[in-house]
Image: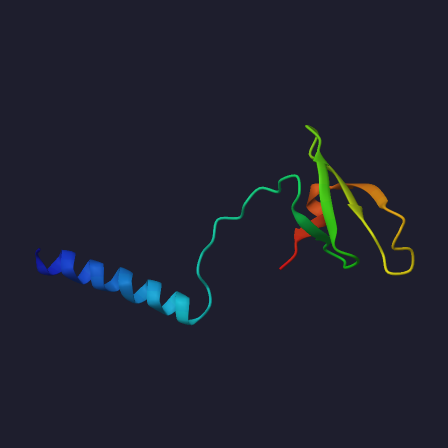
Length: 85
């Protein structure tokens, strides 16, 4: 291995370790799937994706603490939702 290749490998390793230590590991965003748990970007309850329509519209359902026996269901634009942690 020549010096340039060795340096390149060391530099890539340094960048990877630095990003891990900074908690900035690049992760490919995954596409939402039925069954994923999401939340509105503006907040609100955690919801489960029931169905993703071809138009990109997402049908979600959730329960709340006040009425635990009632399932709520609503349609949202995908860009309004974010995955929960």
